[in-house]
Length: 141
Image 1 (cartoon, rainbow, N blue to C red):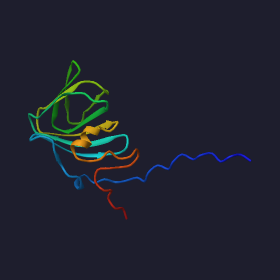
Image 2 (cartoon, helix red, strand yellow):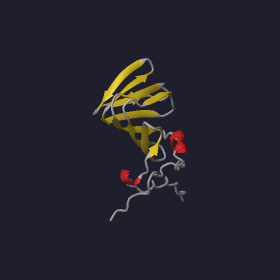
Image 3 (cartoon, helix red, strand yellow):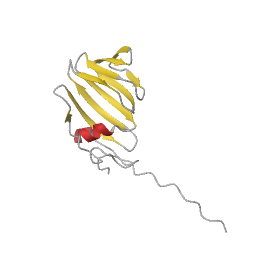
Image 4 (cartoon, one colour):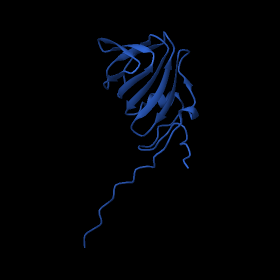
């Protein structure tokens, strides 16, 4: 008789998060954000006032920056790039980068893997892989 094969674990339930239910984290006087994190990726709404500066840094996460309103001047490695509303900037893992808001800017950031440093600053715990975090999931009828 053949032995039963182990079944892969079931993925966690899906969850809906409401941006209006997530507290705004004030990073500086000029920058604030809201974050939703899963086990392997993170999505953030970021608000930058004109003149806000994100200093030169690097991280292990691959990053996508989608500017919804406004404009950013970004330096990625030796390249200077202006990213405007409707444009997406891809920043590879480990690449040094910085940004300046040329006008009041609203943008979405996607990171993979999750940036633990962002969760640590917000006082949040990193979720177990595949477990949603951020605000409690919205109730669905």
